[in-house]
Amino acid sequence: MKRAWQRMLSGRRLDLLDPTPVDIEIEDIAHGLAFVARWNGQTKGDYAYSVAEHSILVEALFARMNPGIDPRWRLAALLHDAPEYVLGDMISPVKAAIGAGYGELDARLTSAVHIRFGLPAALPAPIKKAIKAADTVSARLEAEQIAGFSEAEANRIFGRLDPGLVRGLAIRLRPPAEVRAEFTARHQSLLTALSG
Image (cartoon, rainbow, N blue to C red):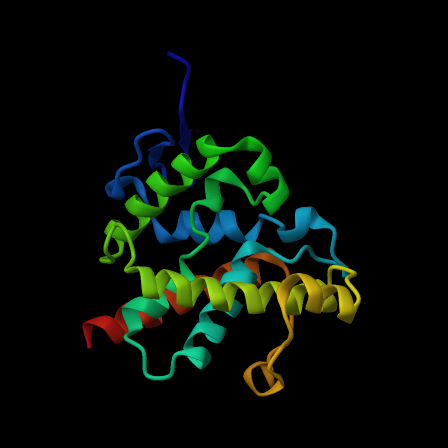
């Protein structure tokens, strides 16, 4: 059988076909996501817009869209793309072309990540739907601000923005080390909120 694991910078050996929560570390996730570019790197600016930066924005949007929600679901929003730290970020058309195999890998990794950080392996359907709604708003902002979509095209594909919802939020392009540090700090603050 061919090798199906990857050595992480933490020293963990993550089996991609059968991931276990014990082999998942937030530092590995933060590092990987900070270096994975959204939109296949086809964005404006001197730095790629990373999945880590996107995840921070999705968590902020999720909190705005669901005031007073339990911090564990905010943690789930922050970690919504966590498997991409090893799978990379594929645009939706590529995922569709690959088919069920990608979805199965993603689901196994998601379950392991969730269990590692005290979340249910599978999120309740309303939470998953609410996170997807925040993810779509984030994609809409990204499309127009950094991915070259016109406002009309972005509205057609992702829907219109509620100006009140996104007030004060802006897409930021920063060095990976800076984004990695913010992602890790946000994760820790949510864990602290959960334990407090």
